[in-house]
Image (cartoon, rainbow, N blue to C red):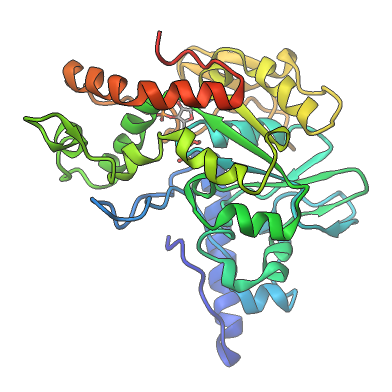
Length: 340
Ligand SMILES: Nc1ncnc2c1ncn2[C@@H]1O[C@H](COP(=O)(O)OS(=O)(=O)O)[C@@H](OP(=O)(O)O)[C@H]1O
């Protein structure tokens, strides 16, 4: 399924609407199994690759005319009441940090309404305009928070200014994960789509003999969190950014969700009662997913087995990231424990 928007024109509308209907039902099937999202333009010097889930954006002209069913935007209130609002909170990153898990867990909260797919508005689709973006949102009632997640925002240079122009009060959430594991996870995702890419070890180095790391490789670049955060701090105060530990989101999901609910000013409704540890999956899962009474784990693209990486290369990467991690702990006032 192509992640790029399709444009409708004149007489082709009915046909396109039909296509969209079928694409949307595919998206719904894929929502939790999250099969989509794979990387394009992967390579040295290329911008950080796409990482979205199964993204199917409705065509801008259909969205603005209000003719597209709001199903893209997630659940409606039972009577279809409320109005679409621009998001007050965003999960901006990081890619492979655990952003899908966080969003799906948050959606259990009755005061949160979220878009299922990644809109990529503040990076790829900004030219479509804020009205286009607002149309993608689910309807909310008074007091409910509208959210979306697009992990590439964290590394998009223009994103802080654009989000601040939408609203200086936007609350930002970043799920961070050990940058070395994150890089391997990122590589694993690419490898699953393109089995012929070079080894992780060879992509890591500019020059293996001198041990010079290739920081232009997006898998490495994304993990220099302190550098990216600097860019956000030009536009947002630290109090408006919450950092969620990707590791703790797995070992103590209720604990991290407690912090997120506090940050969003919500009652702590999501608690340890909502989770169980699924032995087969090896991850926490929801006892009941939003709008369902059945247990739910994330799909098979979440929690993949990583290939074994040469331990010397892993160590070299640990040494590379250490000073950036220290800086990041200092900036955020939170110790994430990646360098023990
Ligand atoms: N509960 C639960 N279930 C399954 N997976 C979980 C969960 N919590 C966190 N994770 C971790 O989320 C990692 C994928 O991160 P993202 O969802 O941010 O990826 S993406 O950027 O949207 O592609 C994914 O990375 P990999 O393990 O490398 O596949 C998981 O480790």
